Length: 314
Image (tube, rainbow, N blue to C red; front, side, top):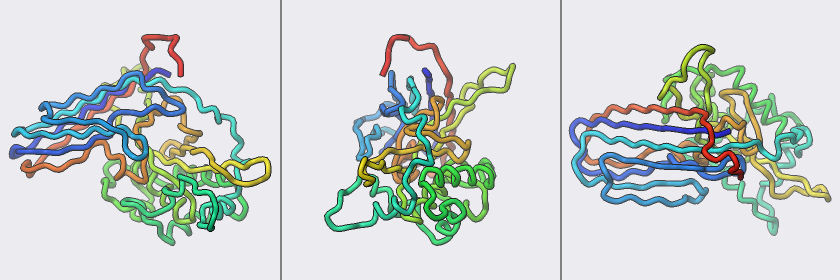
């Protein structure tokens, strides 16, 4: 699927901002299920300094500095992405190892192989493992249940038991609050799933991105009417011919929409960045001098387009 994403962010300040430093995660990266055909970022006012590099996770980061007085900041990110199905699309969830075996695999044992997924076992800025989350997991992570089957069941439970309520939370709402209130938005549901997994010793990570939404029949697609999206991903170690666990694959779980899949929940998803939690992948953050009050406006459009080169593959 060939998709275009336009993500416009506008800040209006009062009084003026004198100087500012910003970091963005607004350019998608190439993954096993998506190829970046084009990715452009425009900034107004023009930065005095701008630099782009990949962070420790391979996410594309753009740093920029504004050194002139300004009352507004406009950041426009435009990308074209080609997506495809995962090569693990037909994997049987019941053939994954039991969650207890995976938990033991990630416990420290002298002389054993270190798996990079271990980084996603621990507490982070927005993910604080808690006994209440471990208790919440009990209904899904029953004895000897395959880890992927249990994780999918957890995702479906969040989807069915929790209510999506726009503006009911903000970026600083603790996951424990969203768990207890049984409501939130996609960021909260992703954080709940991740915190639940880590609370029982299993690695999980946070993914930011977009999803293609279709307008009701007979209505035009709204320009700027979409939004950023977030979901979780859990790690599934593979079993070798001798029955031992080894390097595995990540399976994405979207508890907001009850969808899952290896590397991506579907071809209509766009992977922007991943990290331990929202704090690692926030679209825009920075430090400003001045601008005591500000108004933020975000407009996102995700739409299918005809590929310019239908022979291009990845």
